[in-house]
Amino acid sequence: MRVLHADDRLVVIDKPAGLLSVPGRSEPDCASARVQMLYPDALVVHRLDQATSGLLLFARGLDAQRDLSADFAGRRIDKLYVAVVAGHLEGEGLIDLPVGADWPNRPRQQVNFEHGKPSQTRWRVLGHEGDHTRVALEPLTGRTHQLRVHLAAIGHAMLGDTLYAAPDIAAASPRLLLHASELRIGDHHFICPPEF
Image (cartoon, rainbow, N blue to C red):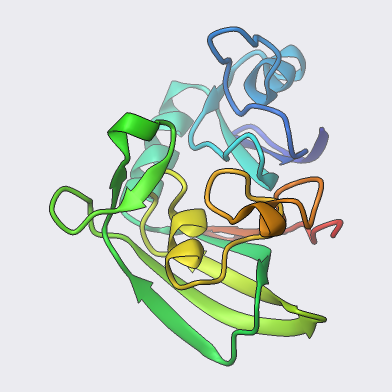
């Protein structure tokens, strides 16, 4: 875990894939615990899936947490992800499909037109790599597994995605190829390119 920025209001880290954002039921090691060892007043503002790497933001103190949480809720914080997906996408687009829990198969989520919450993801092709496409993803909403569910729903699951991809696509990478690469918060613009 690398600390990329720290000031009196926030801490930004590069979370490695495989590390929980917050403690799990049986796994106390997590990004928040590691950050709090360095910055005891650091508080969680948002999360990344355990399998996702990249920029993760923490607030310094309750006032900053309240402000930053309101910024996330009000969509005043812009997030950009990079992923490698199966197949060939062209151009750019918007995925507008409601996402909700797949209760019998938790923690899986699913496109659910009856009970799902409105969910939108902008995507743009960055390049092609053999049979795969590198894409930039901008979540306009913040549902659990939204990016993974949306890309799988349009037939372009992420490489290494053991929850939503077919077995051959899941096996195409030893890790999920999804990385939180940019965060914009007011005057701050954080960039952290993926290692893949």
